[in-house]
Image (cartoon, rainbow, N blue to C red; front, top):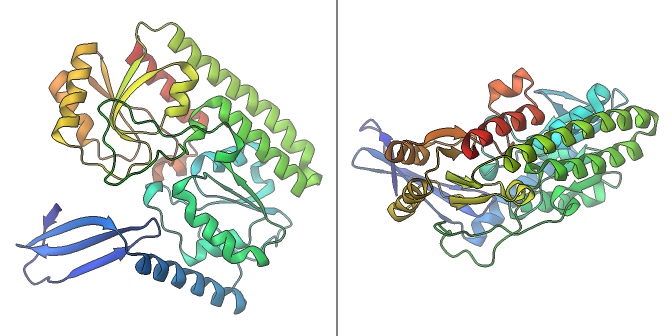
Length: 364
């Protein structure tokens, strides 16, 4: 149970919020404080939530409400002659942007500034998926909702191409390293979905996206492939930059006062890591033992940097930084951008180049 903030005495009651991920968040009033508890949803609650989403979607479809959603506007699917591409999260959105430019209608489902692991699709999002010619999603346990939607619309979407990024590369499982907390009743490790954190994996994903775009829009195939060649060269340069930093470093260990969604990056460059939680954990509040372990590790290894990830509350990293004197820095997993960065046009390459700089400060 977590206390959020004091509320006026006249507010009373409680609320249950079921989520497609199978987590229920319960808010209730105790002693004039708003309290929050999370726990697994009952199967009937999850089924009801998804049943309502699919029902709303079906009613919209059959009432003639199929529209393409882009940047808050609606228009008929392919009304401008361009193919419709939906990306669930930022990395694949940015890959398509680099490959296709303005020659496709491109839409990202995850709102900028939102946490991807708690994302809930709206009926409008389901319609956007239905109207897409190409859908790209991360794969893994947190994408189970995508497959439910695809199952519900499979008879309506014969011309849709679907790319699961996890299936495009050599996937690995999330690793539980020393000192890391595991959520309650977690069973066998799940596949780590953060495949794009490795530039070489990104290059494989870009090639698959290009093939799909070329098949869907052969008139622009030469344009797509020309852009892919240039972009792949930039990914190779990024890979070389990471490799140069690690090869010239005096240490190979990094520590996160946060979740760790960088298994593919660490494996690619031979990095050792310690963190509070695996990359897809929904926990954000570590035990005292976990914080103590990370503090002792920073001190014993004489590490100059403690990392946090994007859109984090940073409290754990702050605590470790204050206890050790280590500098707190961001290592960005590219899941999503802040609204401000998204509107400024920040790219995957921009984020990763900043990661190179911060990683060098941690290792050298």
